Image (cartoon, rainbow, N blue to C red; front, side):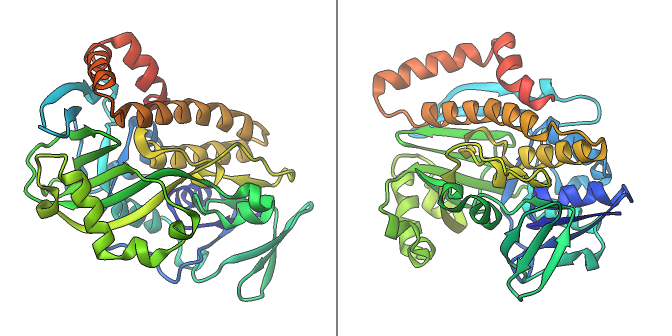
Length: 377
């Protein structure tokens, strides 16, 4: 029986483990550096049809619908006055069993954990070194070693595995943007609301049937390196409130009064595709490649990549990286284009962008190519 080490208990690693649970050709362990998994946070995640279809294969269609929301469209609005620019009908990409879905990230993690025996998850255990060969020999923070036939790195954008394998080349780069995440109260629009401003945008969407809403803002912000690594600054309430004030002053929603439980983090993205030399080491999700969050595909691509890897291993193929690079290029192109278009500041460029949005949002051929080719796969 082949042994698999999964590094990281995030969406990608846990979904991959659920797939292995249904195939007894493998044994596995999940190693998570944190000493607990937070199932209490209320922040949201969007899942397009491509990932819902895969989740339904492991029983997600039986999940409590009260904990899910199925937005029918995304509304594009001017942040300054909340005037609607256009909307995109998301429901056209749905089918009978799979719908565009929003929910709390913690609820998705909870669902994935339910499918995994507790003894398979090892907490407070960080990977320190890898000896590559026919088997991957792993050294952990408790000085214990173990050998595995396969190593699956699913430890996110700041992947320790990737840094061990590629040194400085494995470090992501700061994308000159800061994210603010929180919950928002007294909001009534039950679809996804995307507000476009000068050098920022923010998104509000429901995360269950109980009228709870997620708030995420992406703000262009240049920082010198020492500020980026200053966690005290990012956790400072005054710093977070100043950022929220900055965009609230350019919006008519009075975000300062409405947004609660704010967290702040810099956005890092991958510089290029890095593929391990050993054919028994695999990177999935953000550990493989992280892109700007402006296409809302982070969670979906984490699920997709884990699914691709599982079926590649099961069928004894070697197409994982080839397929993943192709797919990631599709998503990364759209993420960067959205990030650029959403943050325009020149008034003339904004007018031209809005004209284009109004036309393209109703152009079925464009939508099928730009969204359908990603959502429906």
